[in-house]
Length: 57
Image (cartoon, rainbow, N blue to C red; front, side):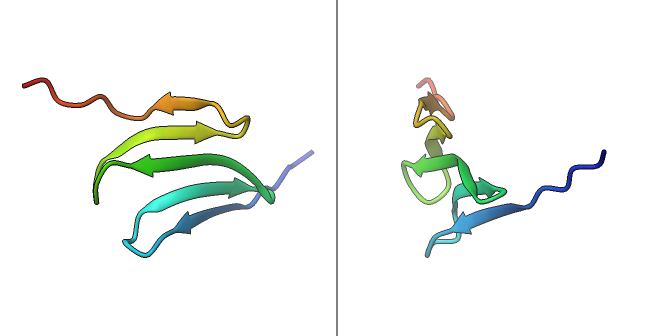
């Protein structure tokens, strides 16, 4: 059996990916600290994870 799924990325006004849907279900989202750096990732169960750690100075 072959399963074909469709993926769709949501892009906001500053051209950043902010969400991903697979087969009509939102499965991933991203929160950004600034224009380029995602700081958090949200999964399909609304769990929050760290996308990137801040640089050590």
